[in-house]
Image 1 (cartoon, rainbow, N blue to C red):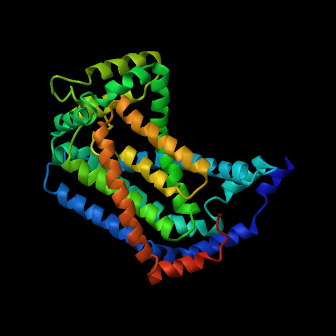
Image 2 (tube, rainbow, N blue to C red; image 1 turned 90 degrees about the vertical axis):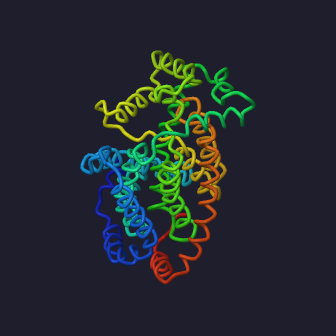
Image 3 (cartoon, helix red, strand yellow; image 1 turned 180 degrees about the vertical axis):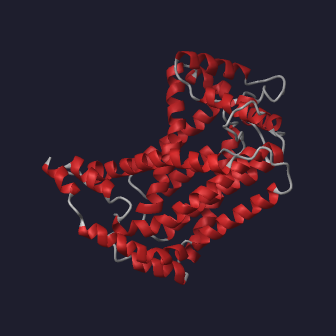
Length: 380
């Protein structure tokens, strides 16, 4: 109890850190100028494209922002808790973990220059994600679903005459296994927030942080918007609902619905809600898209971003990415080729982002901000 009481005491150093952070904000916005240029170009491209079509499928900006804040707030807090738990228990092996965790959470976004470092891009996230959600909802308006038969055929050709789900079903076709894969698939949302919270606030300024965050935003733009429109496809779960026949995924969908009767397989009701949104039957959830897989692209990006970390962190990221790939097929979200293209594009983005980051970090805007951050204690 004494340890917890100490946490509540005023921290003059924390107050001073906040004041210093506010003084650093102008430099931070300048150091992140490249991201704002990218976001502005993304918004401008969307507005131009949207002006050429009937925008009946648009998402309300009010509902999108309110949903974003309601969902992101708790998930952001959960991500910060997990990061602090890792620091207190695994890395620092604290003798007073509860008190250190509480104190760490109270100062999470202010210590070590984090406030100024993370705020600019955090403020950019809502408009960026709003445009992403709009584009995703309007994919079939920009380009009607037309590529599903081609991707189904390519999957069969590349996997020795059978579809990937048919190879996996004898091993994975048990409700408890499907539940575990679905849990990992849903954990992706928290994993992405852990990724963002760490690289927005915790990771020190420099080439690796800039490269990783630039690759993150470019992955969503290129895979989630540009290629998703050009290669417009719905995915295995919706193959039969599109009126395509014969439906080679009917057996998989029948299994998933039966498994959902035994255990909660959340992919099934979510797919139903997405279809209701697509057909205009009252569903609020919109955004059917298969090729390329943003889930698999971002899961690989997470692996690349933590490759220089401990073997434990690297192994967890690899396991998560492998299960995302398997789950994307088994849960009928994606064709395997969706993942193959996503991986190839992500690797190209990672390479390109590295070259851009090295050049950007040499500019006066980035260099001056990094120097101002050098006075703060940085994480190991």
